[in-house]
Image (tube, rainbow, N blue to C red):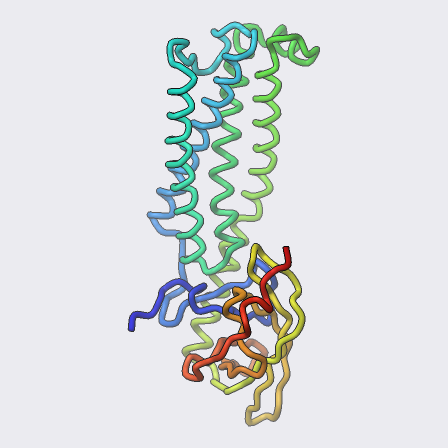
Length: 291
């Protein structure tokens, strides 16, 4: 039987230190992940794609206003019918969403953490949108910077697209800055957590334990995150630790299920469901989010 390399396929995922999207997983037998060439190529394609969409979108908006066509960054030919333009937009949008989705899923699987994957996806998306909108606004302002800016600020008819492009450029640019500042620490955190999991599996002391289910703290999408208590015995005595457990409604282990606790005897532990215990799961409906 082939073992999945996606850590989420081995849910539930436990953490004694992190919560929500910071909880990190590592599939059994896998090495800690890192930013690969494939991820970087996907990041570049995402940046270029969203930049092009932002540029073309604001240029199309420019063409529908009463502003002179020469002020648009990209002059969309008037002979192209609305139907063809919409069809092309749907195809391009589908391809772009596919690239973005592939980047997100690949990053989530390799990095083992949804927060790091989300930030890695958001950075090129926001940067591309900001740059595209900025080019559109800058092109429109270029012929007469002071005059166009004055008319735009005064809300003169025909300058709507310039104002919208500027707002999009500034808003997504500021958002990108916040993401870019958080991204390095998120990547480092995900890497360190996976390295710790690998180290504990290899060198930590292994103990049999049980999980006691607590309340659902939050749903991330349709997936519950619960407070749980892990109990286990070692040569030093009985232990009880609090943890968070992320899973899906169909894979909430029954109360009292067996778990494996890896302890380095220095206060760092890793918990995972015992794969040899043939765990039973709670009814899916019990942990599905209410509508």
